Amino acid sequence: MKFAICNLGCKVNNYEANWYSQALGEKYEEVSFSEAADIYVINSCSVTNTAGSKSRQMIHRARKRNPKAVIAAVSCYVQLEYRNEDIFTDCDILIGSRNKKKLPQYIEEFLHTGQRIVDVGPFEITPFEEMALCHFNQTRAYLKIQDGCNQFCGYCTIPLARGRERSLDLDRVVENARLLVQGGHQELVLTGIHTGRWNDGKHDLADLMQALLREVEGLQRIRLSSIEMTEVSDRLIELMAGDRRIARHLHIPLQTGNDRLLKLNNRPYTTKEYHDRINEIRERIPGISISSDIIAGLPTETDQEHEQTMAFIESCRLSFLHVFPYARKQHTPDASLAQVPENVRKQRAAGLTKLSQRLYNDYMSSFLNKEVEVLFETSENGLLKGHCSEYVEVTVNSQSDLRHQICRVHIDGIEGECLKGHLI
Image (cartoon, rainbow, N blue to C red; front, side, top):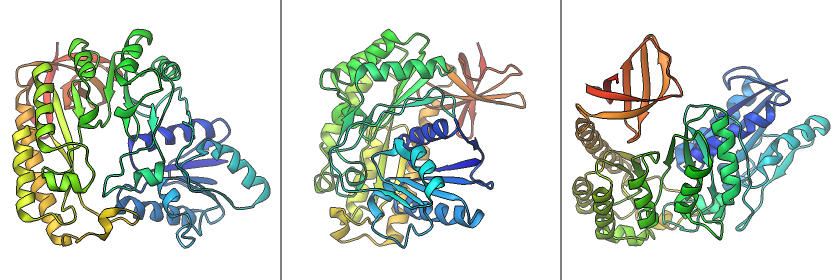
């Protein structure tokens, strides 16, 4: 029998999709989601309305592709919307945000009985569900260390979809990291729903990173996924400054550069605190890339507040932005507030995207005639591509296949959104 997986959403979903692939691959043959399969798994996402719509589309597409296939929908969108039967009529198996490791078992059970399986229910506190991987489907391997969120930002459904915060114990993280490095991955990306809140009751994130650098032989680079400004501790900054194996890139969400909107949306900092911390990080780690998330057109945002956000981002000298036009979501406090018209949201998002492009061009220019360390990810027609420690894409002309290797590169110029260089 053949199975196919459609993964939607964040790095955590990506990690879990890799585990489904590994587990199901022990018994079935994996094919592309665009091909005919006997089993389809839709790893759903709810972080945006577009992601929810895509989840629905993929479920219907799978059923249309093979009317007799077993269709399983898993994760956040299922957790939030499972009571809406109209959405999931094509699904034989529904699993929310717990008991995901039972997916192979449930598929076997459905194949045997033909009885629909629904394992979804309200939850707040649940154990961390460990999913150890031997290999990841890309050069940089994600390593899930944390799940859940306690923040309850005004625009976000993630605490409802993922439950409360929980972390994988330090010794298990180290062992899972060893498996991935032994599988050929030199760079690991520590990821979670609220990565910076990792804590196993005895150790914090800085302790964990020290343990990984000390105990995992062959690990060449650790990268952090998104981390809140309040979680970039002094110890973490010192550790990054003192060990080049930690990537020189932090993605620190801002969401808005206006204090009223930050408070309204339950963000745990002011613009001054954010700006001051960014400057402190840069003083200790010169040249570091600091990127951010921005939401355009949050409910009640005025034209003046949008302009304040634009000016504030400029003053922070962020390296690039992930821009999201605000999308109204049920179950959130922001859904009941006065909404910014959709056309205005799109205009503001376009302005922020243009600003991001300019900031990124300025940041790339700072690398000219300098040397960087690049993990090469692809090699095609004599062109190597990869990312440097600062998470800027770099290309090099070379007939050598250096994929999965970290090499020094001298930067000669800029081509589009990439740095262009030569091997040293």
